[in-house]
Length: 186
Image (cartoon, rainbow, N blue to C red; front, side, top):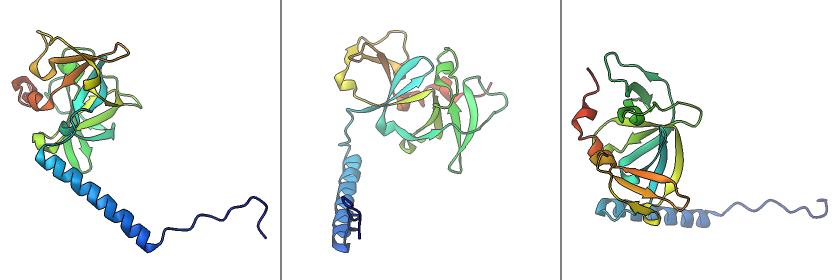
């Protein structure tokens, strides 16, 4: 006899219910894939990351994966901002310290650090070192600031959120076309 107040475990979903859930999931997945192909992707959200001391926004269509910091093998005769190569899921990926690239203090790699890979569509097997991933943000809900004259084209858009935090929007597609970024060696 079961003790008072004891409830039996919920019954497992039957086959018909599981098939229905699977069908719903497949329809949602198909809709997302079609939206991505047609360019109707929701661009109102960006990934917030901390790069050095800067809060940055990355377009989700330009980001591949976010992975924990793995060992990075140094590359001889490379610029100080090019940290080296990292094995990510069997692929050698170049890792860049964007703060150092901009002439700022280097990113401090710690337990919260992540490697943010570029989307395959950019055709550039590279990743950025982020001190922290700050989650999804919406630049549409932020106050746009005048473009900084001294900022490179790939980091010219700036915003301030409701808490007064300044954010820089990074355009990775423009970054990978910058001649200096393509010259990692001396």
